Amino acid sequence: MTTRSSEYTLGERICKARDASSLSTAQLARRLGIKTSTLQSWESDRSEPRSNKLVLLAGVLNVSPTWLLVGRGTPPFAEEPASADLDSMKVTLDRIQKQAQALADEIAGLQERLDG
Image 1 (cartoon, rainbow, N blue to C red):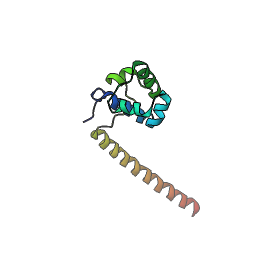
Image 2: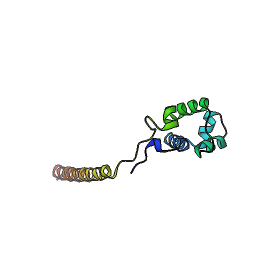
Image 3: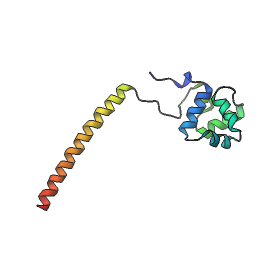
Image 4: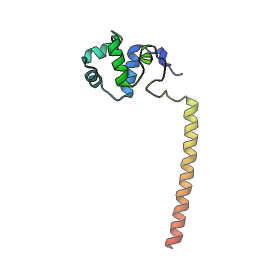
C-alpha cells in the first residue's frame, strides 16, 4: 500500500522533496538563507515557513507551493512501483537475460567458426 502525498505532513513533504533534490539540510538552508535549525524545525513539523520562504522553498526544490502545503500536484519523487509491477519487471528482466545469453552463445559460436 502506498501513501499518497496528501497524507504526508508539510514537514515530511519538505524532507522528501529535499531528498529528491539530493540536497543536505545544510545545503538547502544555505540556499534559502536560513539557519539549518530552522529548516530542521520545518521538516519535523515544529514550525512552518512563512509564505515568502515557502515560495522560495518550492522554487529551490522544483515543486509547487500547493504540493508542499497540501500534497496536490506532482510529487518530486517517483512512487514505489506496486508489487505486481515489480513481479512483471522481474519476469521481463529474466526473459531478456536469457535472450542476451542465447545471443552471446550464438556470437561465440560464429566467432569460433570464423577463427577455425
